[in-house]
Image (cartoon, rainbow, N blue to C red; front, side):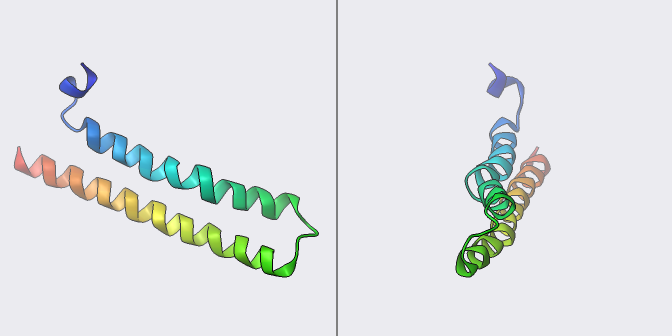
Length: 77
């Protein structure tokens, strides 16, 4: 019913997924580990600091793709 009423329902789900599916398993645990594990080895802190911007870039790429698809679908109508 909802998918029928909203023409961009799958694209909206893609947008939500691009934000949440990257932040939940990668960005947030790395941020929490950096905040809580003060005595972690240097290589682990370096790895965590690399994961945060990389996962943010992946999320931005997903958001861009979802918005580009939404614009493309709106131009077709």
